[in-house]
Amino acid sequence: MRFNFATLALATTLLISGTQAGTAPKIESCPALSPRATAATKVTDLRPDDIKVVAALGDSIMAGFAAEGIQGTSIINLKSLNEYRGVSYGGGGDAGAVTVPNFIKKYNPTLKGSSVDEHLIELCYGLLCPPFQYKPAKDVLNAAQSAGLAMNLDHELDYLLPAIKNLPGIDYQNDWKLINMQIGSNDQCASCINALVPLLTPKAYGKHVTDAIERIRTTVPRVYTVTAGQDYCKPFQNTDFIFNSLECPCAIDKKYRPKMDLVSAGYTEQLRLIHQKYKPLRTDTFGVMFSPANIDVSSFPVNGLRYPGLNNGTSNIDCFHPSTLGHEYVAKSLWNTLFVPLESKPKEMRWVHDLEVYCPSEVDRFQLD
Image (spheres, one colour):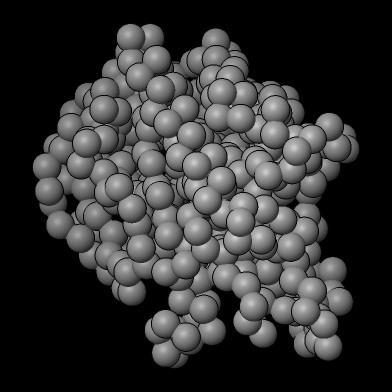
């Protein structure tokens, strides 16, 4: 079983050409970049130190839900329902966290917008999106909502767009902004429910994503299997109940899993088409990057079964959401694909122990195509 981690990166001048510079065990070990003689003026000329603002859209994965697993001695603990936004692979900025924003911050220490710390879950699912859930001091520009569907991107943008404009310490008109969008896991997980099928087709998914990009493009200047049946995945003692039977009902019955994989492929194809659509619409100050990350979650370490002594890659709350270690892997995998053209990006990603991070050189640029 694979989940669609395909990410659209948006920025006022997104990514471009590069040469191989090397890798390191951690971003702190990468050499610094020499300051640019002149600031980037085109989206095709961006490198990490050009990005001044980072933001995120998505679902519970982007929100960092359950990343730290069961809290205390029992799952009957409100902290077990926390979103650990500071370790989110695409939006988090906690000190020492292995995230894409922190990779960028290595090259631009004044980067703004990363989410920090933790708080109780924020929920948005279809029409069930209660108001006043966002916690700006911690969410900052990470607008992801747990349980979010592609149709909920508009709700997330209602928070994000004003938050970017009002973010202290930035030049709204001229600073380059990177917006990481990762959405579709919950759509995929409900794709076998008859009443929801018409709302969750790849075509409907593509429309919601396109609509979100259009709002960004016209508003923001300078912008871009599930495991089961193991005790590890059963947080309640003396029962076989597992959370992902609620979170992802279509993954529990094996007969639906082929359909989920087809839906995932359809969503990814929609993102590819959206990327193609925006090629001719690219300007000096707007671009769209398609960075597919077809991650085989079944390859993640679980309770030492695949990698003895290694912590779990998925949360022990549900074996569905990435743990902090899982977020680290996704962050490294995504970062490493940002500097290579689409045709060279990996078609499938499986767990690599001690995956190193790419160290960009002065001539590297984020790759839009």
